Amino acid sequence: MTAKKRSHKIEKLARVYDDEVMPVWSERFGRLLLRGLTLPERGQVLDVGCGTGYPSVELLRRMGPGCRLIAIDAASAMLDVARKKVAEMEGASRKVFFRTESAEPKLSFADDVYDLVVCNLGLEEMDDPGAALRDFARVTVPGGEVRCTLPLDGTFQEFFDIYREVLIKHDKHDALDRLNEFLRRYPTIEQCEEWMQAAGFRPYRIDIAEFSMLFKSSREFFFAPVIEYGPLPEWKAIAGKGQEMQDVFWYIKEAIDAYFGGRAFQATVKAGCLVGRVPEVTEEDVTGRVEKIEEPSINEVDVGEMIDVPPQRTRTGTEEISIDELEELDEIETLNNAEPVTDDDDVIQAFVDGAERPVRLEDE
Image 1 (tube, rainbow, N blue to C red):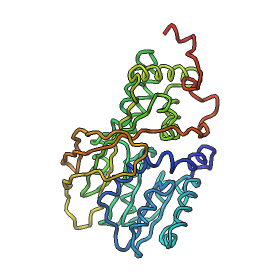
Image 2 (cartoon, helix red, strand yellow; image 1 turned 180 degrees about the vertical axis):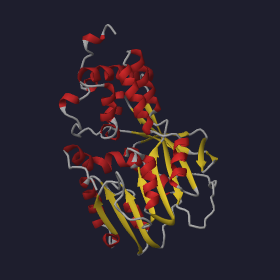
Image 3 (cartoon, rainbow, N blue to C red; image 1 turned 135 degrees about the horizontal axis):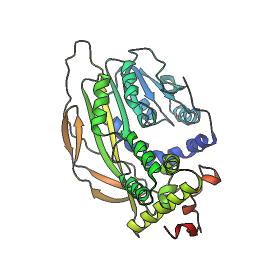
Image 4 (cartoon, rainbow, N blue to C red; image 1 turned 30 degrees about the vertical axis):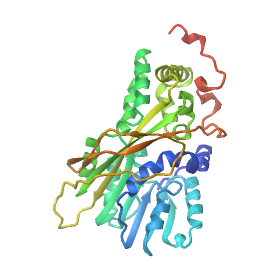
């Protein structure tokens, strides 16, 4: 199976991921994935796209002696970090096997192998999430479970609303088309339901949690590792190349600063967890079950104020349930000593210290 070549970018990401990205991103989704999870007493577990070892390490802590974990990732640099973590856990190395492998175009495993398949934030990076879910179901034994997390429609809505407004105002029609295409990667609940049904999961449910991140300014938003090492390169590609990209991000910076002034810039994240069971041969078709989701306690990472989150709706099969949660706003600090993830020519000039607004933009 195809693996990612080791690159300077991936090496840097592996070094900072656990400290700067995982606490404010992967762990939030991972807690949703692990909530209410029951591991089999005996059997095999597959973690697809395990990265630096979360939630693999947490699964290992919960697994009994009769379970074995197979953890795969396309980036060997990330797996190196995961292996070091497991090496420090007494007896854990005997229960896990790490493998450099991509889940695309399909997993290399035979049918009906795993009692549990988990994938934390891997679906969003796949070309065809629906096909991936069908493949996860294929390698899962009848009666086994699949759990996958991903950001849903509405994630980073505050930023994308500004981005769209800038592109419309300045007649960037091609860029607007690219933005709309990019936003398809954040599926609606209805799209997720279609995927689960097509994969044959019975029963299935979709759990939803919402959290927000606070950034002191537009500059800190774009330089926060969760953004810089995450979607920022694609956001820049949407704007275009060279000077065209630079101009668009000048407009975006000014729009964020104008709208939020001296207030922190808030970015909302809508997290989804798709939970499905591969039916037994004799199992009847079941639509799902209703359960209340409560946010577990978290380790504070530059936590800001506590706020009441408005009631949300969560789908379980064809039914919906309400959530009333108390969530925390994470105030994200930039990684001051991090090396730029992009080449110098690709650095967003609007956020360079001391940079002045280009004269060519004065007339626009």
